[in-house]
Image (cartoon, rainbow, N blue to C red; front, side, top):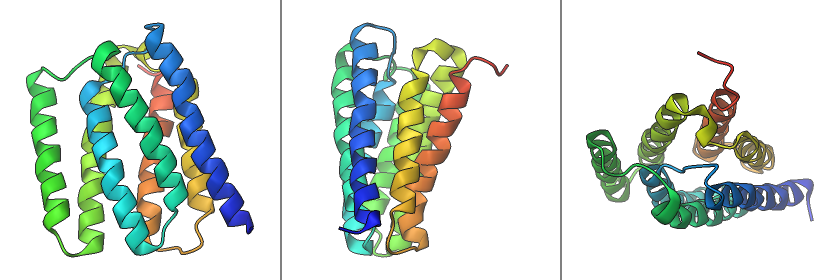
Amino acid sequence: MTWQEILSIISAIVSIASSVPYAVAIIRRKARPQRITWLIIALLNITFLISTIMTGGNVIYIIGNFIGAFLVFLLSIKFGIGGKSRFDIVSFVIALVALGLLIAVDNKLAGLLLAVAVNVIALGLTVKKTIAKRDSEPRLVWILIATSSFLGLISLTHWSLENVLVPVCILSFSSILSWISTGKIK
């Protein structure tokens, strides 16, 4: 087994493990996941998986992301917030249109860029919520997600824009959410 394969497995384990403290915080009502964010991310991870398989990226890392996102989405149905405001609905519709275009586009890079745009919309909802209520997201969770993304990135065996885009996007947003959740910014 190569060092990249080992790091890939570790990245998936860390990604799945990040959902454990998040799930506990959600059930204890210390965290309030944004429903639309997690619905979009769960759907998006399916497209990321297909794209990753087609481009030879880190499939194990994406599977780990999907499992964690799907678990959080299921918990957000009962314990989460959002999903009814005009902003949430408009964001969801834009994300669905972009997802539809992603499926219709024959160009892998264009499709992946659309997927990243959808991810930005989804995570933007959580950033907006976290800025308003900084203690609504556990910092440890976002540090673990950032760590998983970093490990997924450095474990790549085939470096291309298509393969680095998803882990870099997730690493960026999880780092931002970790920073916002400290409460030290105004």
